[in-house]
Image 1: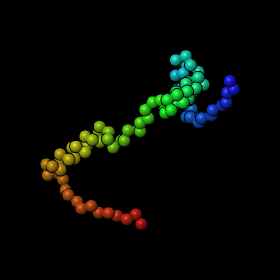
Image 2: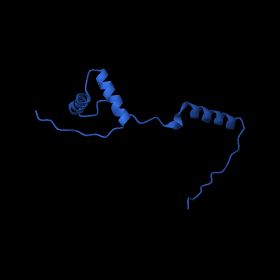
Image 3: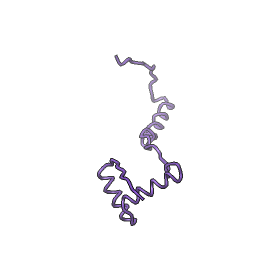
Image 4: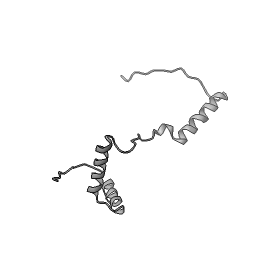
Amino acid sequence: MALTTLTARVDPKDKADFDAFCSNVGLNTSTAINLFVKAVLRENRIPFEITPAPDPFFSESNIAYVKKSVRELRDGKGTAHELIEVDDE
C-alpha cells in the first residue's frame, strides 16, 4: 500500500513530550498518528471528548470572593451605585 506524508505544526515541547509518551508505550509517533486517523475514520468523529479550557471567572477563589461580596451587601456593608454606561469614543 502506498503511503503519503501528513505534516502538522506543533509546539516543540509538545512534540518532544508526545514522542516520549509514544516511546514509553511501545509506539513510534507515526504509528500513534495512524491509530488516531483510523479511529476518526472508523467512528466518524474525534474519538475523545473535546472540552473548552476552564473559565477563570469560575475559579474557586473568584467564586469565594463573589460569595463574600454578596454576603457583605446583604449585611448592609455596601453602597449601591447606578449603572453608568460610557461610550468608548
